[in-house]
Amino acid sequence: MYADAITGMIFIIACGCILPIVMVLMNTRRRMNETETRKQIVLAAIEKNKETDVEELLKKMAPKQKLLKEKLLSKLLWGCIFSLIGFIIFCCGLWIDWCGGSDPDEIHFLYFCGGVLFAIGLGFLIYYFVGRKILAKEIEAEEKKLTAEANL
Image 1 (cartoon, rainbow, N blue to C red):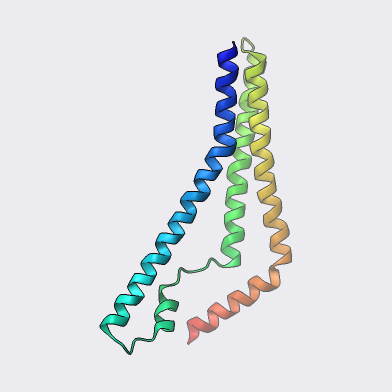
Image 2 (image 1 turned 180 degrees about the horizontal axis):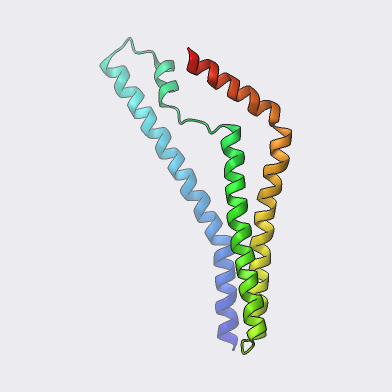
């Protein structure tokens, strides 16, 4: 019994503390590699042609920034995904509870997981709808700017 409790605590600590730290480190390392690659490309271009316009080259090589509308739509997508998965897990818990014959702790765990995922999805959906109202003018200005650039 004692070993099971320790195993559970180690799992929770690993998922709650170590996993996010590893994800942040991996993301930071990826960005550093991208920056280093861009730097090497610019240096090679300068070595080959001394008259290279570095600013223009950096503009072309810069990763494209997502538009506000794209960011909001990704929040909508993730909100729908999390909400749906949370709802399905919660319904599975209800169905298992209705059928009976299962450990109440496991059923409560399903309820908890389903509720948490549903709440996360709801947060993303709220972010989308509030962001859409607040950023309406900025999104419209971005779209006008893109159409003006496309017409040139």
